[in-house]
Amino acid sequence: QARLVESGGGSVQAGGSLRLSCSASGNIGSKYLMAWFRQAPGKEREGVACITSTGIAAYADSVKGRFTISQDNDKNTLYLQMNSLKGEDTAMYYCAADETWRGSCYKGRLSSVSSWGQGTQVTVSL
Image (cartoon, rainbow, N blue to C red; front, side, top):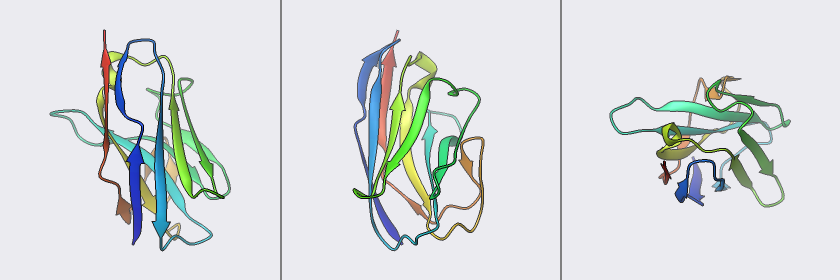
């Protein structure tokens, strides 16, 4: 399994921006999928943005146009740039990997996840 470590969470006012990072190490093949999920208190975990090892990204409708997922293969790091943040973006954000591209990346969600990070909290105040 890969080891995923998130960072960059924090508190921000509505309309502000944050950039999350996910440092990946361990058993990730040359073909993989990675994603950001989030979970708010009392709600199910939902996919936010996902990306293939070839750089194709997909987003949940709720964040399209505001969030951007990207990756730096040299640094083995996944990013999530979050702009125009809203109160409803408040959640714990998790990095996830499908290390051998077993599933799919669609509307921000991976159909198969083999590794999870521990999460980083994002709080947006109104």
